[in-house]
Length: 600
Image (cartoon, rainbow, N blue to C red; front, top):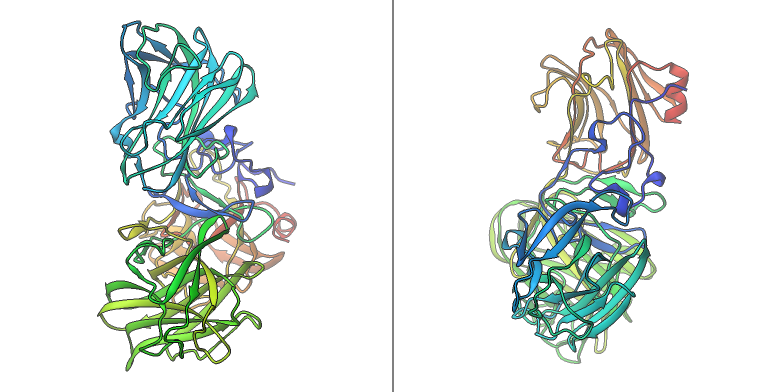
């Protein structure tokens, strides 16, 4: 079997944690800088291996292994970078050294450039790997103002024991070997604002918060992390933080690289029904167990105004999303079945032909929709028992004010009922013909930028050659739907979407799945429209012609194609493909038998 010159390995070889940094996958072969150049410049969510929805990157700190970076502020101390071996075996751990000035704390804090913002009532956990050098004791404390003054903890990093822990905090210290300890502190924010945390040299396990001292001793630091939640998550390395790929497990089994277009969630406080933006008249809210890792709220109807849920006098849980311009939109709810047979949904003040509102019901028992308004397209996923991700898509043809989304637990007569309840995790309303991953919001709308996958110098680095080459891609989630026509994924001789000579996978606004195309000069020829949800594709060319193999079958033979020096492997606007399981380049056109083998 021919050996690929570049491989983005099949996902089972991927292990998140210390060794991968910002790499999409660890690469065993000739991939320049061992890193897929990936850009998003925004946080996003993914489904992790445990089936939980989490933020990517969930580490809020920037430059988590580079304390000498300008993103960190050092006070009465200095940093010696890359001075000892880190827990992952690399020479990337730094030394924090006190300057010996008396009567002041000796510490390092994230600078304001990091823009760390916390939300009142939300728990956060800060952790850092620490090793004794010439000082035995270390302190982590949250910034006062956004947290109480008792949100701190002391650590003995010589003996691996906890010291004093402030009354507003919990803390742990974990031995990770080689004299290293992972020290973590958890506390709950008491206001919504920019915030920070400090790592300090202290003199004992009973030191006061932000202790002034005269230390000129030191400890080793590595792997700082700031996450939302009540526990330290597996460590995630960051640099500028946001440009981190999403390795997603939502399809089950092996993880995949997830790529999506830019979307904006206009539902304010998308997961917080306690806010006044949500009208809950005649509903009681109570806490319940999380849904896919997201804090959930139980909504329970009282005895007042029980009637068909679309009626004016019937009380629903409503969020007004305001004025929202014309265009196809998709509403998504993540909910869990309660004690009613159905749930009702309505979007009002939309303009679909003569309609001013669209609605439908969903039967939990039969997992079917009914009473679906004209102009409304429905869909659902059920990631676990009694949990449903409901999607409603409308072709909204005009601008209307005070658009609102409604939800209500209902009975078999489509009426709200005394004591009827369901559990709510989040709502999302976005412009687009299909739902994308969850975009959390609070007091303002939030935009998730598109995922971009870019790699240059393919020909220069001999990943393909003058003899031609072979491009293999294993896609998952190539589902039938109207796609964003602007989305492209290509290997070609320019980095521009105004392609010159290239092979492309494109979204087609009028076709169900991706199309495979060749571009020669300014002429695009569609070679194939794919027909399966999971596809393995090999495209090989020899400087004169090209062949295409899909799922073990040669589907295109000897189509003319002369360019060999294609330098750019690019994807933009994402979603084409949505998931990449594996990808490889061979610097020669491999045999038909081998193409059939790798695509079967």
